Amino acid sequence: MFCDTHCHLFKEYYENIDEILENALDNQVNRYIVAGCDDKTNREVLKLLDKMGIYGCLGIHPEEVHSYNDSDLKFLEKNLKNKKIVAIGEIGLDYHYDKESKQKQIDLFEYQLRLAEAFQMPVVIHSREATNDTIEILKKYRVKGVIHSFSGSLETATIYIKMGFLLGVNGVITFKNCNLKEVIKEIPLNKIVLETDSPYLTPVPFRGKRNDPSKIKNIAEYICDLKHISMEELANITNENIMRLFDI
Image 1 (cartoon, rainbow, N blue to C red):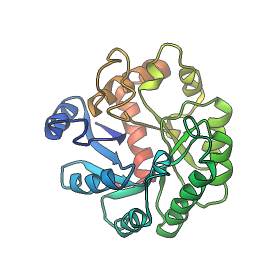
Image 2: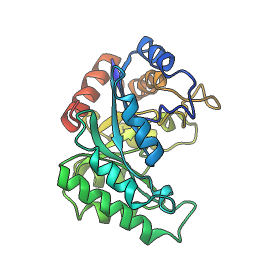
Image 3: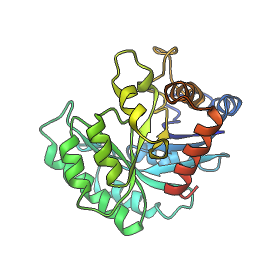
Image 4: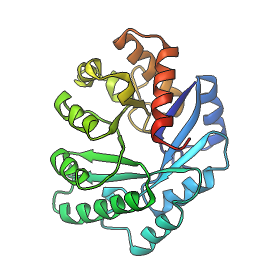
């Protein structure tokens, strides 16, 4: 059985979450880490924790830098002691659409990294067109975690791994013109975790359709072909990685 270490199982995207979970279970996925991005989704994560196999992470995404407020951060901090909240995330930097807010993003990112240090929790990092800043900021804090949706170079992967981070691999690896497959060939299996980022980044051959945690199986099969290993071996190693990092 596999774990989807990063998904967004919210009502905005799915009419029947129980049905989604049943389908995932039929496809060898029995644990899920649902990632919050703002106050609304953080609250929804907490409501989902009663469901079998669901864990959560809470955080303020960099794209929310203009809309969050202090009460959102207080709510975040207040709920970090919940036993099924296993990380602070999805947090980080995103310069793709908004380069003007760099400093505000950095301030928000560092605030949440300080929380992670104080609560001794892993972090789930979103980094888009901000690799150098992300690396330099992470070096300032004693934190470990996952680089969500990693798609960088082997050099960048090596830097993150040496810093104690795991790489989140999702459907992007199945895309035709993606260089990630060449990077993952060189990365030890004990340095990756599997994720879907549902409802986004649906793997081949389902591109164009809404993603869901059952697609972990397709991602796993692709990596097994790439690395010439069995599904059982991949499941065992990635589950060990997850248990080493998260309190699951």
